[in-house]
Length: 133
Image: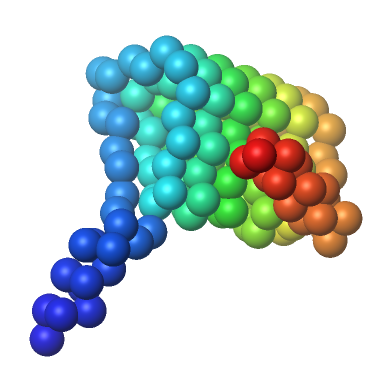
């Protein structure tokens, strides 16, 4: 009954989640193989291989690169998402956005350029190969 869940945790699978809580400030770049949620302050770049969540009181001063992202807080920097980027609530984005798909709620503030579609997904794959080498 619990075998499959325990097995994926032992393998170091992407089922692990990381949370940067409110009141926490991190200076430097973050890399996460699993889901990651930021509720504090990050002064650096964030690269995630799963889902990225930027909470409503979070502040990110740097670039975000990942598979999927939900942004509810403040981001100053470039956002690159291969799949769906969801800008929600009172999110404030200052920077360019590159996404396969984009969903924006009417309460969001966005200042920057938006690039979407299959070409952007290919660009992100090319960039990830260069970064990983």
